[in-house]
Length: 256
Image (tube, rainbow, N blue to C red; front, top):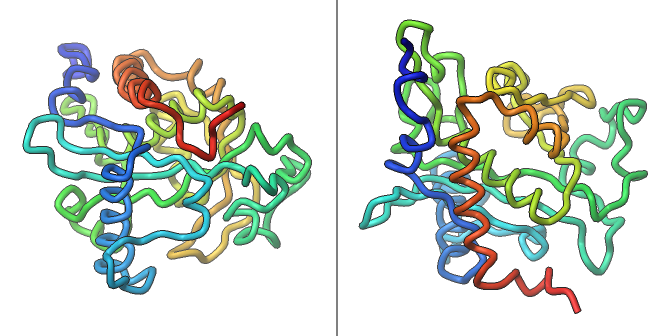
């Protein structure tokens, strides 16, 4: 019997990590601090800021996710965000629409023709150095490789990157988002296929902090297609993200 059969990956996730919908100032500052540590201080992707908070104009219409250790005192682990259409200007391009303007294959999908309230972009995934210190991982903000899944004899599971992606999918589900876009490393689709997650490349590669390809996920298809061993983690992530909504939605999402 494999390790994956002997214990619930959901309980394993809950033992070590938790994800939060970062809707308040405190958790958002934690997110911006992680991003500054990773993107500015370690990788040099962005300039160092005096306040040690990495932010941009997209943050004002984004939902943020924070991962930290489950036990107290909590240790910050990583973060990501879901960039939504601008409420005051829905047709304003998402970040990837700028970066991949020349390489998108609009015969596969054309974001400009979709209802803007049903699309969003996953971006600014970052994991602190302590949690990605294997050889070759210090120059990337988030790492995932075949080794993370181990072998049939010695299986493993990459809780951190999978937990962060599931959390942002949970937020997208809550917001009625149907299609998620992202810029990914070329091999990400292969890694995620192990989980039953289909990621579709929708254009040619671009240079953006390394070679990246524009990709998409269908939110409902991802949720329905999750492999059996991932579903316990998904159940916990859903509970933790939904708990964040009980304290109120971010102001820019408030509906009359």
